[in-house]
Length: 453
Image 1 (cartoon, rainbow, N blue to C red):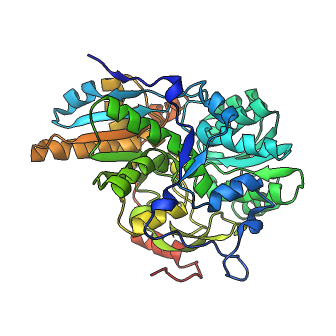
Image 2 (cartoon, rainbow, N blue to C red):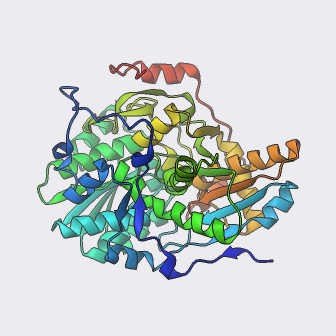
Image 3 (cartoon, one colour):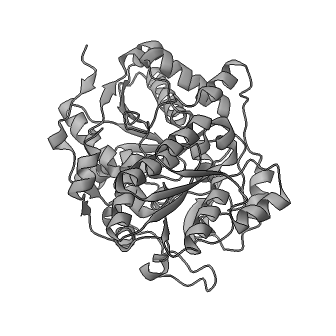
């Protein structure tokens, strides 16, 4: 039974796809945190190299992938796509389930797709050091790998919960030459402040971003890199979906539903945006579903309003679905999804009802992850289990309704460094967790920005 839809290295796309060019309503501009007036690209110059800033604001439909970046992609791209025959059989569903597997990259996830590009553009501008944050460690390890390739120093602020639970992610980063701090740390002013107020905090991506931004903003030789949320990051990840479109064509199929986990947006955007292009350009009606944790449900229960991308309020104000920048999610194992807000592009698409969102509780996703592992043989990262949970729910709906729909899932990374999470699951320590409305209201009440109509 044929399982792999093959592309050759020559078929790696040579351009990234910019969905903003096709959006009926363009994203609202970022605002200056002090004046609340729209800011231009120059405001981002202290943090990012100019070429990435240009990509952040471009309206061009396609952006050329530099040859050097594309050559490095060739170390692991194109990534395979599989038909999940065994999962279909286990679910006894008439649905066809495919998954695009990004766990074959050197760091085991989709994150190098943008890490390599960002390191390349920093190198072109002569930058000597890049600082960043990381949740579960996939982004930090990806940027460490990319910086090592280009001879750039890398400093990573890793959310403390993951720093403690996933020590081998830290070792990966160290192996590629990166310095890694548990966040909040005593290496920055904001970290010291938060530790003085709450020494037992498990940290959050918002806090780690604040520390990384502070470090970059106070050192002239240092730039900052973000692994999700921003437009240029999602742009780079569209290499996934563009390959997937070609692979589905080779399979003689087209997905009715495209699903990916959601933290800040790069994972979802990477697979879904090129299929949304088919909706825009060819009149297709492919459903694209973002899967998030019910303990951090910004898309399904947050508000669409301007908010900071970090906890300390150092970033511009961004129009996003948010739970409030002070929000610290429950200490779930899916560290890459513990972020208070959603990327600007994805937020606008959801606002316009061009995409959907689904939330799953902590116990449900591990049940889904184990079901997938036992059927398909790959142990998924905790982040990836959220998309699997949505795919299983859609496959079960197809069974109830007697429909043979085609489902495509982004299996964004393997869980080989997440055995602590699975150990906790089998020990009965993973419990269902869902935020109360009172908790969400209390976090949002701290925001001074109005709702966006």
